[in-house]
Length: 200
Image (cartoon, rainbow, N blue to C red):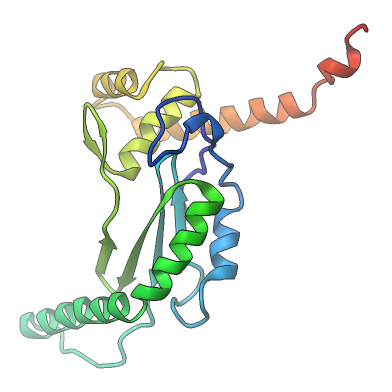
């Protein structure tokens, strides 16, 4: 699984769901791995989630045709990859809708799909959530990491903070921040039980 799973935090709801009541997505990769039909993807799909959306992207079985390493051959291969993804999208549409509905009921997030083969990746109808501007999931995950860590109070504040960070090693810093947050969670889990230790 790629990407960090985010728990719901208080905030605005989407699709009738309140952010404070969002279920955890800690098991989302396992759920999809068990629910998806055999043969759809070559291996387990990549599953990422934030407060708004779950995105499932899988690798399709490789093409069996051989293409010459020429401009025409590369163009034919790219066209074949696009066609294979289009066929997968059409053939699996009804079942993907059913699985998405089950996942939405379980996790209270919309589900988007994608497929990858060779050098071609396509996402199907992913959400674009307004945060001063319209951002897709990878950008929202960055903003939510800053909010979850207390660096910013909201996605809008996090966006302004991130702009000031342009030119620095943002990816390395965010990885270190996530690791530190995980250590804090471990320390909290191993601490004394406040209710047990309180008087009365």
